Amino acid sequence: TPRIANRLLKRVRDFAMVKDQTAIDIDMVDYALDLLKIDREGLDQIDRKILTTMIDYYAGGPVGVKTIAANIGEEIDTVESMYEPYLLQIGFLQRTPRGRMVTAAAYAHLNIPYTESD
Image (cartoon, rainbow, N blue to C red; front, side, top):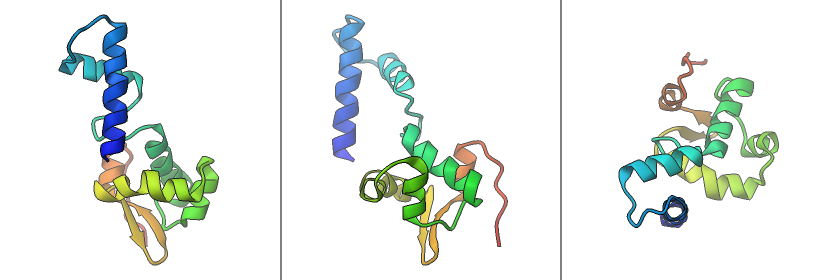
């Protein structure tokens, strides 16, 4: 989202200032995002925690948002408004009538073997 992109840009700018660089180049972006633990798909630690929790404890789903929030220690509203939209948008999460499910694309991104459940 634009809000997240602006926040990250400011953080990258801060890293550049600390390194005494007047311009931000790709190496500085890579350096900053690596330190912030943001991967090439734009996932941060909480995004990955949501997906891995669903995979490790619930075989990828379906699982309810209340259960996800309780497992990762976040508020339900935070999961629904901050994390879930991007994971849905990039195709790593699906909403079903029975709950949220991790997609095969997310398994591949996380380097976790995917086996289709019943």
